[in-house]
Length: 387
Image 1 (cartoon, one colour):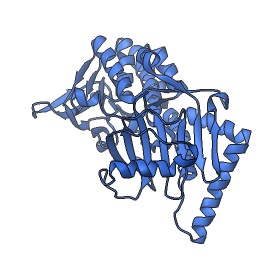
Image 2 (image 1 turned 120 degrees about the vertical axis):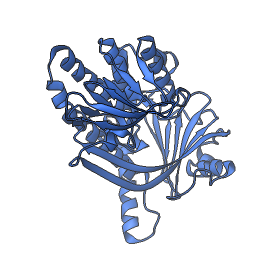
Image 3 (image 1 turned 180 degrees about the horizontal axis):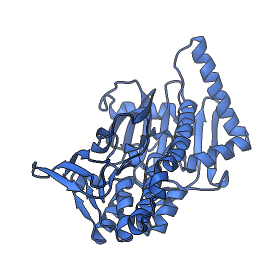
Image 4 (image 1 turned 45 degrees about the vertical axis):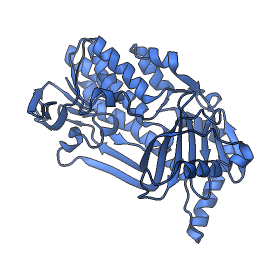
């Protein structure tokens, strides 16, 4: 088995397969140090934790992660909190930085005897319609190479070799939501004991705790804004303004450790199987960070694929592989629908024309329903935590 990409999808898949006695190699284009330090999402759904528990991959998150079950909305009409852990299915998130999870999964995979080839870039997947697919690579020393296995799992993201190698006829569903965030990682303690969503006329602002000393923030900005365009002082001033710090208390300020610009997009491929090539994680579908679903979908897809591959390779039962694409797409589209809903809830047009006023009035009504309606709160909680 060849797995492309050493992110959550690839490493969960690799660990489960190794535990089932199935040999696999992971090909990763980045160096190990980069893989273990690249910052990504940190909210793990309850189902994700259950999957990691089931396969013995959750020791680190139980030792160092923190359970979380509250979010706070701040608007021109005031603020309100939802204890979503007591709503819907009564499930919580576990806050655990993705780079820590990846480090745990990597260490476990290597301890099991798994093979990872870092700095090895997959160039193309060939012969996927045969029972001997091949992956053409550029080895660490720059020389070309070729790897063969019975199956290939493309867990190498939206720009990886798996996507580039898909046959004609693959359907791509894509939507640009027209919203851009400045993503920030600040060396500062969390400023509130909840996930914070601020809806403001100047744009959205978000607060997500990562650790006791590091906080993730988001600021909506104009499309095309460079990551370094705003000074640290401007960033903190804008965060305090949009999060209404005068009314609800100042933010803990600190150095900005990382910056990135995120254009909110949705992207789904169909089908997710092409002969011996299977897609998982961001290679299967890209989802906006508005609902914290990316890593959770990746782990779920990896677990479904691992079970199907195990059945096929150990007992010749291919039913799981045949159903893999449809099963995953059910979860992906459910997550996409909620993400789309969240984008509409948190962002609105800035104009004063009739259409903009109408859209913003609808958004205000949605927020009022979320504040007052128990059935709406239960729906939110179930979809917010679920995948």
